Image (cartoon, rainbow, N blue to C red; front, side, top):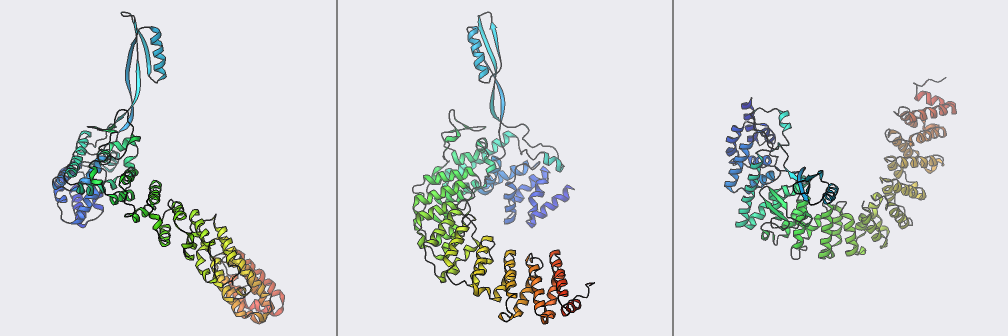
Length: 603
């Protein structure tokens, strides 16, 4: 079984299959894995290399993989392989995590009198010392006070090392050991000191290579790796990279600790090989944008602020990109950097518009404030002002509305106001629509403009469009407009259309050719899914048309058939009622109904 599994693993490696890493981690023959290390590491193809890096980015908790990991470590160290060593550095940083535990320290003190001993007893108990006892010492006439003082200490939890049993561990057994790590605690401490010693040697000989190796390392850390101050200090190599020369920390063989009387709140960037970061504004900005750990991003921002001038003009585009960060701290920092640098004053309106389009929600209010400071609204084109006014961000929408109010609008500009119809900021949309109504009400009501409002996904915009539709005589008489309204997905628009058709049916026949009306009625009735309340109204209109003009019955009866066969009960009932009234209206009408609907039973 093991032999067949190993053959499959090798085949997956040759194919470069992503499943290789998962299969390899479940394989637990330590002897086979040890012999496999050099062949895997030495493979000249790029895909095995990618899979090797992917394997090392997983936790060091694959059962009996100690020989494989140790041999990969030695091979990479001997080859000066920064990429593999960087994955090992992060994996080993993650392999030790201390926790706070409570221990009791024995305390005692001798006093010359019982009164002093009793005062000490009360003070000790008040300070949290437990099991305080006063003991008389007859030989000297003194009194001994002793007890147990609880203290929090950092300690490695027991049973953190992966067991070293024989092969064949079940899947359930592997899951039970997922929280453990390869190697004993002492070996893990040794290996993480050794991997840092490798990068320290790189930094001493080649600062540029050191920086090039460390930047990708810093991008591998996650927020979960630095969940609290203890976890930060447990990242042995990370603390060296970021705070090696800090006066707040001491490096001990078992890990980093704060110095006596110092607090981690005082921690400031103090990296190893600080000269490697001098003049590297672009690299630091890249870390601010791409690092997945908040601790690394904050360190990079603080380091960038130390740069003479910071290079904001040279790296303006990168700083602007930071306004789209998911981290509010980064967004605020980048906005302050833009403000201090003065670079925002040189941006063109098209630059501001591009920033608004790409920025995330946290960045938009900041951008709106910067635009107010550095962009004259009159410099915006009509289309740009309308786009800003339609933004879902209230500060941006207000700035766009102010820019629109500052301009004089001509009929030629009306088409550029189209984005306002679907303005996304609900609190601002009433103001926008009121301005739009006041601005365009006196102009000719173009059909396309009315349709634009009636196609809006917002009911208040459609309400304005319906008001324009009802108040403009010429568009109301345009049958093509009705035809397009009949296809609307919005029930309020279709109901308004049905009401207008009712008025047209009651008007003299010669004012309107009936053929377009027939097409409109058919369009509404055939729209089974979206008919809603409009269908019963149209059914009654068709019946009214047949009563008024019996010669149209052959053409209009099929429309009533559509309503009769509708899947929706309200339309069927409305059609049946209309047919009954129509059949009773006159003898010719009754014969026409019976001929068209022979399946109906009449009494």
